[in-house]
Image 1 (cartoon, rainbow, N blue to C red):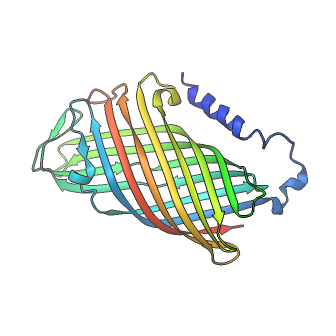
Image 2: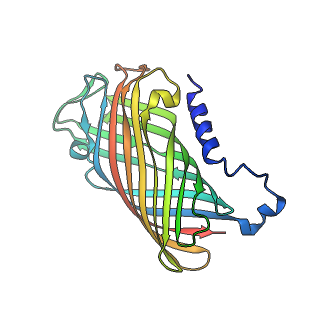
Image 3: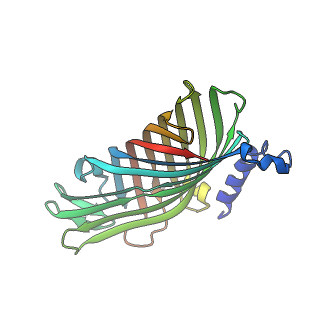
Length: 282
């Protein structure tokens, strides 16, 4: 079972890249005119639309937005690289930092993995969920100058750290997890004029996590990273853009406990980001 993730990902990669591998590339295919390298960076803010988490079946289903200080805006950034070959194949590397810290006075008792943080106490909250993603996209309209549409696959590596700590440090609970998550990828683009464009891009999946990562634990999970982008080419190598993004997903189920609590986790989030950034093309 531990090989399920690898087999699933390689199966889809084989399907999506079949057109790419049909012909052996000739040396002239690697001339500079056939490939592009793009670096993208963006900065903005993140707003929590809804976010709740629970650890152990007897734990509190805690509302971060209502009771955990996530009702304000947080800094947001993202970095990515794209390598495009012969207008048909694109490979991506993405790093998405995501760290939300807050501190609140609890209005009600908060139970986390059999530990109770009493109402009226001061609690520090950390929700860290950065991820790394590698993607492949196959362009289906490579000969169309106005419209573009591609489909492909992504493999995301989550790196989660969720912590609850009393203000005096006497009480503490944390949940940490690193794991791969495959996802489907789509991207569509319309060229509005010689310089302006609009683009829609999404990576997402809803599936039993136990099948995807090869474990014996019944956990259902989902991710969706969808963005709407408007861009304008400032000069030949540089494009500026404004981006509206939805980040959502989570998981629910029981895994083997490696600490206090019974191993049950329920974690669902819905975030929105607004950012601006630049793309540099070589």
